[in-house]
Length: 212
Image (tube, rainbow, N blue to C red; front, side):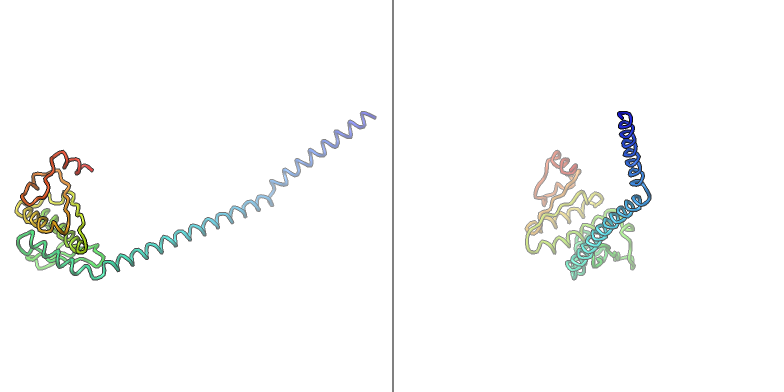
């Protein structure tokens, strides 16, 4: 009787083990794999939708930024171009070139006085390129500093400008000291040792400023 009971128990245990093994096999079957795949696809689609929304938000922000930028610059290019041309002539001591800025300030058309045609910035001499870029920046700075005084920071922008024109530029800085505070970061402080300079930095201070 004990042997028979043991045999029954063994049979029941083996049957339970076989049933558990079958369930394991069924859980790894094609239907379960298909369900897992469908869940993964649904998850990826949700992620794609979120990414599309994020990209659409970025696109909307960019379009809004561009519209606001053009609105802020609307009507500004012409007066800044005219003033930049005047400043360039002042720095050069003679009419040098007519400057015309694009409406978004991304391009500057240069018409040298003696060439009779437009010229690329690269066609101008090194000193003239510096003076053109400086004239445009200062013309814009004048427009922006009408209501209140601002700081204008220039990082060694006059390396190739001759001494005579540099003196004219420093004279300009002196005349506009109540409108804008000009800070020049340079490794060549002696070039700015002119009576019109408001502050003469010691060489060590200039080196630190230029290094930053």
